[in-house]
Each structure stands twice: as C-alpha cells, then as structure tokens.
Image (cartoon, rainbow, N blue to C red):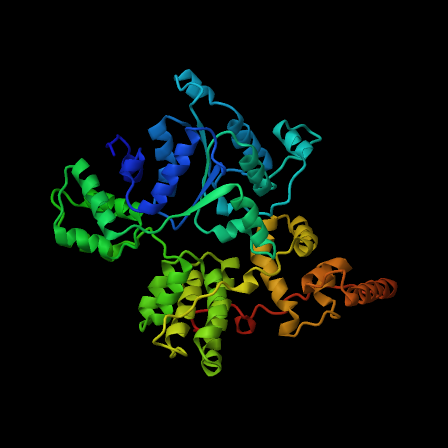
Length: 501
C-alpha cells in the first residue's frame, strides 16, 4: 500500500495486491485457487461472484488482482447503462480476445482482460433474453432501430458472457437475492448463474484487521495516535474498512499532529459513519434492544430503506409477538406507512425518519413472545409475490407508457399498492372492476392485478363479465372518471404530519 498523490484516502491507500488485503482469509484462499486455474487454461466456472456488505473490499480485491498480475480491466459499474447491448459491447466482446493494451505493453498471449461488473445486484429486470438482431441493431443504431435502454436484457447477456468468456469475470454484489429476483423463479435464476459462477461471501473484518489498516494509513501519513483513541475509533465500526479510512482522513483534516482520545470523540459525536448493517442483524438488534433511541439508530444504519424495513417488520412481528401485542402496535405501524407517503409530495427528511423510527419504537415498546431467545428473522415472502412476468408485463408495461416513466419506477412505487388493494385475503373482490377500469386495463390486466392465471376456471367467467361490463358502459355512454378532491381544507387530508404523531 503506497501513498499516492490522491485526495481521497480510500483511493490513495487502496491495496494493489492480494497480500495487502485484510480479513476474510478463507474467501481469499478460494479466490487464489480460482486465479491459479487461469494460469493453466480455464477454470470450470469462469465467473467469480463476490457478495457481502459494503466496505469490506470486494471491488478493491478485483482491482488488486488486475494490478498484481498486470491484467487490463474492463469495468462496468452501477451508474452506467448495463443493458444487453452495453454489456456485449464493453464486456462480452472484450472477453473473447487478448486486450490490445496488454499486447502493446508487452503482456503477451498469456495476459488477461479482467471483466469487472460492479454491483450486479442493481441490475433490474428479468433473465428473458433479447434477440441478437435487436442487440446488434442497438450497437450500430439507425433511425429505424429501437435502441435498448436501461438494463433491458442485461441479466440474460450476463449469462451469455459467463458461458462464452475466455477472460476472467469478477462480479460484486451486496444482496444476491436482488440479483436472482424475487419472483417464483428466483431459485432457477440462482442455479443458472451459479452453474457458471463461483460465489464467495465476504464478511465484515475483525478489529485486529481494522487496527492494521489504521496503523498502515497513519504511518504513511507520519501521524501517531493514542491506543485508547484508536480503540474508541474502531469500537463502533462494524468491520467497514472504507468507513475507517474515511474517519482517519476526517480526523487528520481537522487535527494536527498527534491524535488523542478527545479528537476521536469530537468526530464521532458529530459524524455519521459510512457503514451499513445487514438487515438480519439489524432486525435482531432492534428486537433485543430495550431502548427506543438505540433501536432507531440501528435502523438508520441498516442496509434497507424505510419502505423495506416496514415490510420486514410487518412480516417478522408475526413470529416475535403474540396476537394481543400485534394489535397494540398496529397503530404505530399504520402511522409509519402513512409517513412514507410524504416522499411523493416533498423531500423532507422527516418522512424517512418517522418511517424508520415508528417501526422500531413499536418493536421495542412491548415484550416479545420469547424475550430470552434469539429471534428468528425470515425473508418476507410477500416481497417475492407479484413479480411474475405474466402479471407485470401487462399492467406495469402499460402504466409506464401512459405515465411516461420507467417500468422500474412503476414496480417500486405503484405496483405494491395495487397488489395490496387487490389481495383477496385482504377483502378484495375480483368481480369489482372499478380500479381496473380507471386504469384503462383490459380483462387480462384485471386478472393480473388479482393474481389469477388465465388457465384457471374462474378466469374465463371474469373475462366475460369484464368485457360485458365495459360494453354496457359504452352503450349507455357512461364516463368513468377519477374523483377529484373537493376541498383544500387540511382537516380533510390524510397527509402524515408530526402533529398527528
């Protein structure tokens, strides 16, 4: 780790070899074995999927591998378009031959081009393949061609890349489940990808590794620190190396010379660490906490936003609390849900804050069913429902076109609400066509909202009733309109406010 003239310390002290990496010894051994196989041909799985929380060195490792071995890197990150055409142009084609840069620099025929796909769990869409003709037309666009946008076909091209690559491919992700998808075919998607990729999990590093990195950085900067000050600095760090380096940079920017405990304390009192706690650990800490303030801080540092956290609490509260307690905390859960709606009308931080805090306050205000045991945290099954392609392709596609927004936005912000109000277990009636007609859907769209496949017996009857109902309205000249607000009086509003809390 050599100091460079780079302002950002996380880049200045980024390791450039595997020997400089700290922590995760077992994953590192597996990675070395995978790399060694490239020296003797091709490994059976030519892709490597590094999963784990932010800040543990996944992307750093990939770049260190390339630096150590003199490989050229072709990198696609989460901010770039990663549709089928983009991946084929930047990655798939590069994976078929030796890098021109490597050849010019004397790398020879044994040199490699490392394909780095960062944060692949941010790839949206499914694994449906796009035709080669459509991909090729996007690579050389013309006036007639329909150019691929966003992440369209990206996951399918990722599979194609892993199947045909002659160069090493390293991918990183924080949450593999997002990559597989949350619909009913997620296991199949996972198995298809892992048949071509070796998945290696990274964990938060231990305090001994944090100390080593801290001393290495401070020695390079000719700075010293009290042992107690260093222990205080790493005490609340959950094993995030990136957050540690940024803390050191912040302290050194405001404190000259030797670093004492007072300097560290003053920083931690006013700063928010750039680290996140995984959802399972966060939920356990909240349920076992006796302090509402502590529970709120845990959620604010979790790797989920309030929308997701509310869903996780709604699901796991069922097993943690008995029925009487559930009824007592339901008001707070409802208020948290209302608070989240303010994000559509303003950017106030309070919507995020109350959406997080109210759920955690409810969870610690009452005694758990078995308070002495470690609560079992499960993945909310209903988050996987409603993502079937036969449902989303009809409704989500139509709504995104009419609203002029992306399909991802409709799926994230509108689709869950539509699913909820059409859930039969919550009292929805498939023979009530009101919402579907407001949305201008056809009969198959109405079935999709209710999760009724066309193969079911009652589907044919509902389609007949739906079409007949529309024909009667057309014959009678009935106009279906969305009701408009009749008053601007705030007393009639359901908008969440701090006063209601």
